[in-house]
Length: 342
Image (cartoon, rainbow, N blue to C red):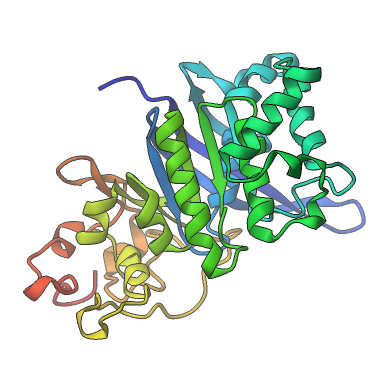
């Protein structure tokens, strides 16, 4: 297999908690706490989990919008955590982002044409007539008309503004796009259109996506592989088909059981999660999911499980009892739970 386009190893991002008049450090929030994965050229990796689990922070560290506390991020064979100043500019061109809110991410004082030409000018790609022609090409690429270049962001609908955000990301011809909840702020009727656009562009241009989302139904539709994140750590990583067919972590099972189904009788059964996500400044000992896990055992509270291979084709899980979750399921239903917690 070819070398990965992106290699993330033991990525850590902690935010200090400061208190008092002198703002002394009184602790730290473990937003990302030892995340590792690979992403190949032309691949779509979905990164899912509840709000506050560290998904967006992971994406921003990869883009160097946030400085990692520790760990390595290699893009195209280069360790990007060591780049500073001007050395970062070529990286910026190869790694772009689509933000969640298509309105706040666009400058309201600039026309759409100016927003797109700015990216072309900063990276020395085109100016003048060539830049105007490139802007028209980008707008048509995302399903907008060339004359839309003269409009301001407030003159567009939310779906159209997100298309402008996609065009801005594509302007500098990147190899990787971090899509941070790109459809969560859109109406349901518009989501499918934007998702289909992103898929079409990915195939036509050979892009790699890190697709950050909390909606597992959306992630299933677009991803080749899926990584499930909980409280700053990856708890499962597998091909999309394998993960949705046979999840090997109780947290993933619970998330999948919450997806609305056309046939309620045939939907996946799973325990409803109790309580809230623990405080990331004071994560639980052992398995971080054990306080909410319906299958937790004594071992889970004292021993942290490693992310390990539990099935063929690179199916990884951070559960002590992942093999039991993979047991035969009557009629394709939910996993057979261990006899006492797990």
